Length: 448
Image (cartoon, rainbow, N blue to C red; front, side, top):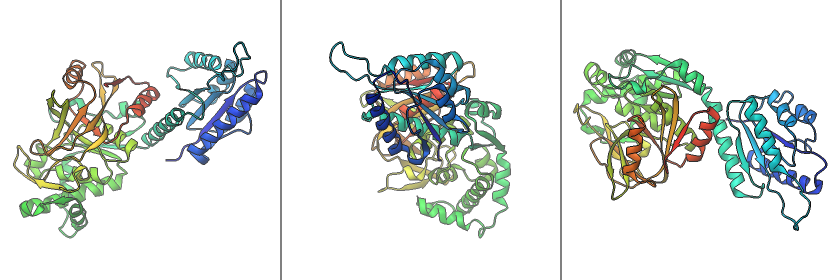
């Protein structure tokens, strides 16, 4: 998703202009290198609030980067904030070090203090802060992370999340509310009863469900072990979900699973969700809508499917926390040499469900969009590593190694009342989640 980024290099002409223009040119060069035509760069430093006003006129940006090339008073940022309410970066340049007692050439840091003070007085959120020269790798890395999150937030305003059926009794932590989701994340929540999708599946012929059969054949192994009726019903259910997702522009989905699909339909929905996850629609089971949103965020930041599961076992010696679920993990997360195998549900003894341990990932994150005791949203992220481990239990499993002590981590999560479902993201998104929390004005818990 393309962005429009407006760069506001502000300053006054009484500082060392040779140094100021050199900093401006290098900063503009970096921004152009990172973001190409997405960034609007002025021809020169903006030496007055009126110049800021002119640069902002009709811009409608997704992000503003305000950089104190030199000190500039609060009137500059005030003018920017008059025209803009979205995410803003305040970029401070390092002061060049010359001979002792020499001239202060830029005074960028004081300018940022002035800008941050005014921002604090006018807005309730906090700006993103960057400190460093354009030649520093950390500056480029932070700019990229910020823009990655801004893209995510822009996409989230177009996201349509589906809630299929209701959460089972005792699983209310995942029940989504449309107004809350729109207010906090900008996304739209739509709902459909599980029986409606069951009805759509039952109405399909074998011929009509052939595309779903072909899709399933690309991903899963061992379907010949499943009774023929369950195979046919699985293909029809997959086609029903695929069609409904496509017709309604669904970007993420939470689905009721038990008991409806076992009792009323006779075939589980687990493998349907597994394939949808693999082909790019994040899906959580047990109708956990905030779990699905967690997965969508993780997928947006990594372009990879996320694992969804319960924390079921810890090992202090290996410092690992194992996540598991009945068998709906994305087929794409299976080890390539083993593939995504088919089995039966560990409790209901009906298939097809998925059976595998996930592939390894040197960098991963445990992520949850959750709520506190007062019903306010909060974010959790734990950097981790996914180990190359075999399937731990019947179903699908993912063994994560933490950097923080696992026993203390689990205890802290329990004491803070975090939910029993998590997304395991196949990539380190810690920095991005911290930025997202600031931009959404949500508290972020990071366990390192």
